[in-house]
Length: 416
View (cartoon, rainbow, N blue to C red):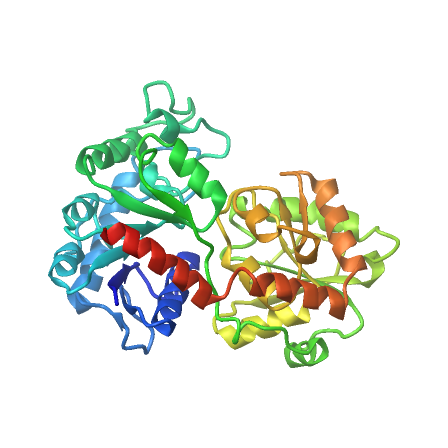
């Protein structure tokens, strides 16, 4: 059996880390000799290793601060997280000495692996891309309002006129271009959208690439009795509950909360469901001055463990993800697996998730009125049959062992 080492900054914090850990666990279920190597380990799991120990964690923290200080010199209109891939952790050398047949990279920013360390890995590399950083400059997602710089190799004139200071995005891209010349990465993207973007990029246009969905343990993420779930969370039984949540859900512009607000205000005026609808928000505390959404709001804070998340999704009638830019959010995979349909804008990997009416509805990107109508439509058909149809769709696509089998096939190709 193939021996693989997955590499990610963390094992459980953030969407990419959670996805990587689930992929790793699914592979162990089908007999793959899989380990997950991280810088920061906070899980009690012997298959997750932090080979650099305390020294590695300190080096990563210091390296992250050095990169942040350098990045502060670049004034960019793109608010997403940026990584220079400049500081080496030493993990690359450990990977070369490991007994793995191949290395599966995931989210390796945060001084996990430098660009040079990735270039020096001597084993076959499969790279599961959870955002656009691998083929972009320093940015993890391109500027929504800017040019597609990764497609034109960060050519002169492609930089936004509003950006000032050193062009660290172009500098980081140039370092990748030089360091990785001649290397082959076998790419995996959770969504077809990200696969298309990688193929259009200057850096990865000729790399082998396959779209494989993120997997999940369907024995854990499954529908629970809705009334019991609401009772456990102290939520009303006689209301239609809309769920919204993400890391920094109300402050990250890409997450679209500023578009959800007017959509919910419009929904509150819907004669069929407005007076019976309430909102649940997780991933954020109640702000000091909450926006007037036209609906009662339950701010539920952070939910870290799986059982609490299953209760949360099971309690909801619909999950809304108004993101303007996203790959394949774990939140939608989790919601669909729990039998709760989703509403989202037709962007990124959302069409891969909300692929039919059993799974919910998509609205044109940024269309507030269409988003409100989509939520109302899904709420109108809520019920046990809708939940069963949603769950059945998830079972056909997200089982972690099925995803692991697709990975195994691709691993064999990479090793050949």
